[in-house]
Structures are given as C-alpha cells and as structure tokens.
Image (tube, rainbow, N blue to C red; front, side):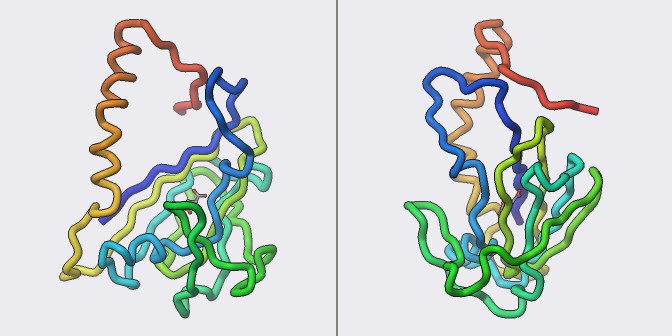
Length: 177
Ligand SMILES: O=C(O)CCC(=O)C(=O)O
C-alpha cells in the first residue's frame, strides 16, 4: 500500500541558498502507524525494508526498539507534519542499530518504534521500504503519499528538462553498482 525510498548522503558542499541544519538529517523516534492512522490504515501493516547500501554505525543505520510493536505508543506532534514518541514513553538512548550488509532485508510491524541518525560517513545510506496491508483492508492504497507526489511532479519534470537541456548538472552522484 505504500513504498518509500530514504536517502541520506553528505553533500560535498552545501549548495548556495539551501537552508538546512544537522537536526533535519535524521528520522525522529516514531512508528509508522503514527502517520498511517490518519488515512485509516490498519495497525497490522508489515513493512519490508531493503538496505541498498551497507550501513555501518556512522552511516545513520536503521535503529529499532525491539518489543515496542506489542502496544501502540502515543506520539506527540513535532512541527506541522511530524510525530515522535516522547522521552517519557521509552528510553531514547535504547534500541539497537541494524548493522547489515547491502541487500539485507528487515520485516517489521507498523507499531515497531524506530528512527535513524545523520549519515556521517562519506558513503550514501539508502533504504527502500515496501508496506503491505492485509488483503481485504478497506483503505485506499497510497493514500498518504500520492497527493505529495502529484504536488511535486512539476518540480521533478522541471529538473529533468533542465538536465536534458544541459542547464543543470547534478552536484553529486551516488554509486550505482
Ligand atoms: O530510513 C530510515 O532510516 C528510517 C525511515 C523511516 O523511519 C520512515 O520512513 O518512516
């Protein structure tokens, strides 16, 4: 019902005009149900996460709190679009890093609390996620991300056209092998 690609890589230099802070280069402590609930998705979703790159400790590996899938932990809003589990509900310094080779796969419940820190390594840290809901669930698949993707489509088309017409050159490349 949903797919996501997360991509963390240190830029060789910060492009002019790009405002960013290190605090943004991470995923908050959350479960995916905190986001799925608003779209009527069930708690029984299972997500398959594929590590595209090897993820050593300094790469901001996927980090999970084992056992937290047994009960939905309440989240607090952060800004307008994000949620996190408050530090009173679990030990923010707990949990375990998933240190694994490229091609490894993790399956996890929608209720499993996870996060990941900034990628401080020179290599990209990419993951692909595919979420599945049980057959017969009433929810519309892709309800959460489709509107965002539609809104972003003109920007992507502009980027592709600028590249094709050689008016823009990518500032960095990720390895493709
Ligand atoms: O890619 C990661 O490290 C975490 C991604 C994540 O938490 C999410 O997409 O919900």
